[in-house]
Length: 223
Image (cartoon, rainbow, N blue to C red; front, side, top):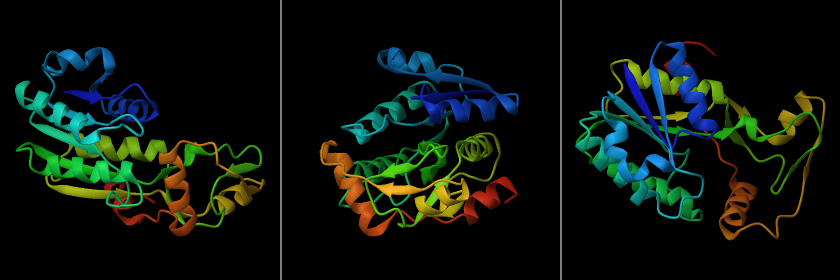
């Protein structure tokens, strides 16, 4: 089996490729160099995992291009990498993912949508952890290895067509993660961050980004 990972050169793509390789699947990471001839790059693939670059300015357009290429390359199954809580009007990049989800659902392809929480690997727990929001805000955290395992499951096994899965390995706060690692978390200023990031931090400050752990446990068959 051959699976394409569209936008597959970052840490998300590497995690998915590693999990697929563990199942004996030929994973093909596609990047910007493949974009102009995405149909050709997808040739021979049975499925595609679609992940857009962080804060892409037009994620619906990106996903529409990928879906059209899947149709033309006769790739019949697509898994879209969205985000936990995609419809959040205060965060434009989340809304872009909500709109892209709608395109996926209406694509005519066999589809599955994954809605990952905040990556645990975003935090260096070997030292005090600075974050530009309330260190006690609640999150659904996701380990990249668990993401890869979930993606490989829905890409290679039957029964996931038309499903949307929220993914979190554990729940908690940055303060709790730091305490468990024997360090501390502290709030810092983010006044120089781009507007999109500042909007995200403000939302996290007020609401966190909760996500449930049950869907991932069910997909992986383990805690």
